[in-house]
Length: 252
Image (cartoon, rainbow, N blue to C red; front, side, top):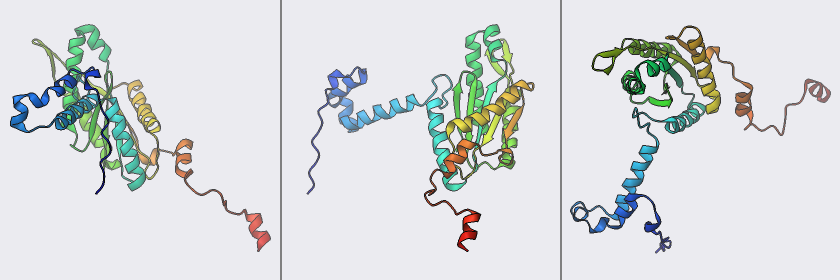
């Protein structure tokens, strides 16, 4: 028979969350006896809810930057382990500042919410859509072969360009987005910063070349950087380097 570890006392009265005090009275509520929910189950439900809130953007309901980086890190591991083809897209709403300046921030918020919902409809359930910050969004598309990357990005661009956005009873706006993307180097354990940098460079090209366009860093065009080469070969055994040709001839 294994002994249970000693319980660690927790003073819930010292917690500042209102739900912590509700937990103290939880077992005395009539609803508890009806549902059979224990104090532990109730606390777990609170923790799950807080974790969900910490990963969501409150304005759009999309994943936030923290959620995005978590998915990106797992995607990097999958690419290094399986060679899966994963595409990262960064999208920026064109001339968004002028929308806020001309129509107000409430109109800008409505534009963000409408585009967020549109992006969710444009991709698969397996894809991840996040609000990266401000008027910028990010999409991670696993199992996306290079031949389909441009098609998916173009579909997103065209759908948003044709989308009427009602920001007031008598006011409808139409906006465009610039899109930059990069495929993760297959079979290489890259880093989030290097991958984002590649996609961001393509987004910069799209913005500076006139906006409302797409540039993708295709795998065949992507040279593995020095940092990624270091990540690729760092785990190899370098204690026994191959002999030089001169040494081989001397030993022959």
